[in-house]
Image (cartoon, helix red, strand yellow):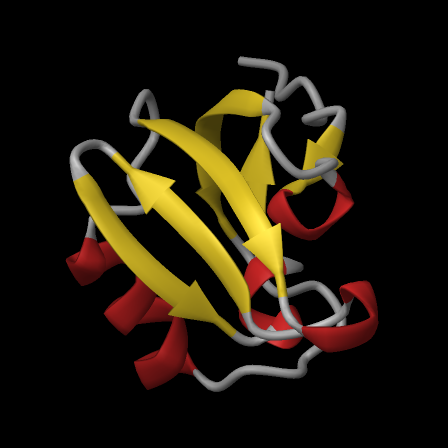
Length: 85
C-alpha cells in the first residue's frame, strides 16, 4: 500500500482554514513518543476535522486550534507534527 504525503502540517494552515487530520508524526524528532501519543489522545486522529482559529502574538504561538468540537492551544512544535490534508 502506498502512502500519499499530506499537503501540509497544522502549523502551515492560515488562520481560519479548516482541514482534515491525516495523522501525527514527528520526522524532525522535536517531540518524544509520549508527546505524540498525547496529541492522538487529545483527538488529533485521522479523519478528524481541524481548524486553526488564531495565533499568538506576532503570528507565532500558541495556536488556538479546534479539533472536532474541542478547543486547544498548541505550541508550534506540536502543530508541526499534526499532518493535514
